[in-house]
Amino acid sequence: MAAPALTDTHDAPAPVPQAPPGRTRRSLSDWLDRTAAPYAYVTPFFAVFAAFGLYPLLYTGWISLHRVELQTPDRREWVGLGNYTEMLVDDRFWNALWNTFTIGVISTVPQLLMALGLAHLLNYKLRGSAFFRVAVLTPHATSVAAGTLVFSLMFGRDFGMINWLLDLVGVHPVDWESGHWTSQIAIGSIVTWRWTGYNALVYLAAMQSVPTDLYEASAIDGASRWQQFRKVTIPSLRPTILFTVVVSTIGATQLFGEPLLFGGTAGARGGTDGQYQTLGVLLYQQGWALFHFGRAAAIAWAMFLILILIAAVNALVSRRLRRA
Image (cartoon, rainbow, N blue to C red):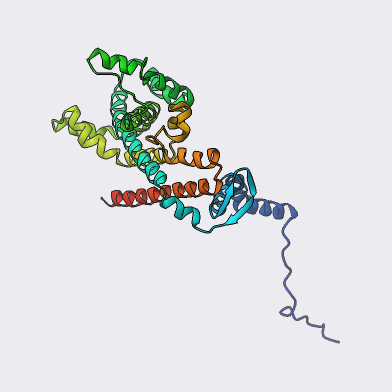
């Protein structure tokens, strides 16, 4: 009787398990949710930024290397860094840069100091505190044109309210627009009026995040309200104060609407003698009044480089504050 044939089970391949079709589709969907979906969410932002931020920036840099007139933008003459060298030897550029700095200081320093004081007052439990918080933000919601028009009337030489108040105390009328420092003080007051309330609310939000335990401990130690403000509130607000200083400095560098509208027809030149001409006004004058598109682009890139320098200083100061 023949023996039955033996089958070598070691040589037979193991069956490959097949995943159900539904599980495969779910795995693909999970992979898309984890990997592809985040890129899809951020793509609209980068698309809009590339179209309206990056491309204009690069195009402006390219135009700044050419001699281009606004009437004939298709006719370009390569000048390399010629527009930049002309800008650096132009007295109007340095005058505008200095005016931008001085108006920035005149408007930023009192603005942030008053905002800090307002925030400290609004931090108390006052009756109708919501109304006061909305009220301090009202100037920021007002348009630049409307605010500047009102202040131009207030600082008028013949019938302005400021000169009327000065006359009550025996001071002769001041020609605010024609003077160098007087015009900058007037413009700085417009900027201060518009942005003080906004910065006050920023400080208020930061103050409300300070732990109450710090105030209670300082009160137990006998600290007065003023000492608590100096020893507890101010150190806790250092990052926020740095943020507002940087944002206000950037805003001062880009200052345009207030000086343009303050002087009426002379505002496009920054005053009859350029006494309050800022970098933004100089850019407008070169590009849209004198039609030197290439020079205007060079000024725009100079402003961009100044903002990069401000950002670098901010990063350096922030790093030192974190180490402190």
